Amino acid sequence: MEPNSVDLTLVEVERALVMPFVLDTPFVCVICRAVIHEPDGSSDMCENCMENARALDGEITPVLPITLYTRESVMRTWLTHYKPDIDGEHGEVTSAADVCVAAITLVLSSFFDANDWLLKDVDDVLVVPSTRRPPPHPLEEVVLRTAAGRFLVTGQLTRTRNQLEHRSASSIAYEGSEALRGRRVLLVDDVYASGARLQSAAAATRRAGGTVTRAVVVARRINPGYHPAIEERWNAAVELPFRWSRQEDGSTISRSSFAAPAAIDGS
Image (cartoon, rainbow, N blue to C red):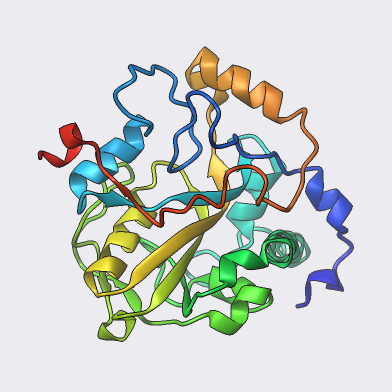
């Protein structure tokens, strides 16, 4: 199915999108764009990113979310139903599932078209494997329909049998192929919440000898009700016009990874 094979326009998709919090503004995590709701001045990372750094190799990969979303949102519906259930069946009727696939495809394709700088000097694009779903990941089919599709490589990053909790990154949850050695890799995932899965996959890529240039996620989960500071930022974000290009908001930071603070890496 092509993105325009269902009755869904880019304008309709943009109505469901919310601009991520901008880097280089106070109390925004330099890794995942979360609000640092109780800053103490000791780190420019949020609590989740510091926890991930503790569990991994002392480095953590910057994440570039295309949009923010909340639990009760159209974007969450699209993200839930663009992929079949684990048994291969869509949870929604076929026509509704087709709309979800078309929406996620339009989001990713429009984003990569507007940000071709992300693909410069990239050797491979890898989709982060699911924690439960057997390969291939449905997002791989979506990526193939975008400008990033020509770099897509499959099977080079796999889940191991080791457990991976929702909020606990693991250095042994993924395994990278020897073929990643010396390669510059862009990771792509659909959802980012705590970051445990994506950051574990990034660590495995580095361990295999690859360099993770950056990670792109379709949507970064936000819970405005968790803290007034998050709610305030969210309310401001939903009022902003959505734009696809991200070269003006600090997204082109020069570092491909961030070392954990001394208090985190134990040095």
